[in-house]
Length: 245
Ligand SMILES: C[S@@+](CC[C@H](N)C(=O)[O-])C[C@H]1O[C@@H](n2cnc3c(N)ncnc32)[C@H](O)[C@@H]1O
Image 1 (cartoon, rainbow, N blue to C red):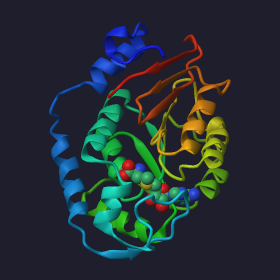
Image 2 (cartoon, rainbow, N blue to C red):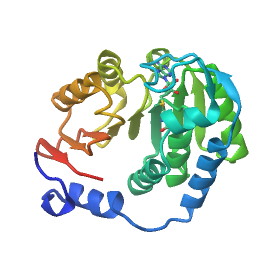
Image 3 (cartoon, rainbow, N blue to C red):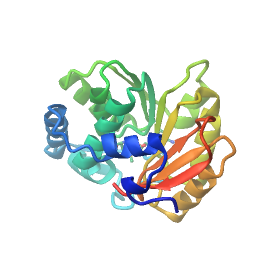
Image 4 (spheres, rainbow, N blue to C red):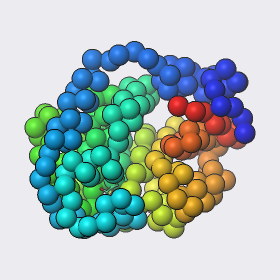
């Protein structure tokens, strides 16, 4: 284990990321918009029929789900939204891919963090996609392309794009996670960041994370005990960090 707080981080890249982004306490004006989006969803009492294409939810067993429950249980918390906003603000990725939109809380946060980014986000459930589309329109967000597709179908259709930032937040199972990663490798570059959510959600995810860290193309990783970051920067030693958020 390399470190659990910023002081022990000897890599300037990691130190700056921890101090200027992870632990940045600035109260950004955009946080108000994140809160508004979060609250709109928390008050949405509509019930929709959800077909889950992924590992499913541990807490939402029925197909008929309240929007507010989906938001609370499968979506980012307000704290996580702020974190994703700061990541996007710090790295300023121009092209972003998210697998797993749900109700758009993470995509919205990444979009606000860098209004110049082009964000593609993919959601397989049509009913969830329809609601999210409505929320993106209502909140006047212009830099997100929302796609209704199965992750595999979407990735199979990719051609020449390169992504600066990829967020994997859906279908939290061992094999699909490794497959998405492998299939996305042609679409990354030296400075791409791959972020995984819920790396401790299940034994399958824990094993997937351990395996991904060992992948020959991965040079550095950060384990936040919730999110996992993978970096490919060839100019750096291979190093694996633990940073508590
Ligand atoms: C954990 S939620 C995403 C939460 C969202 N990123 C956020 O932070 O608010 C995962 C989403 O991925 C979708 N999903 C799971 N497996 C999928 C697949 N194979 N293809 C397309 N969508 C999938 C689910 O329908 C679900 O809405």
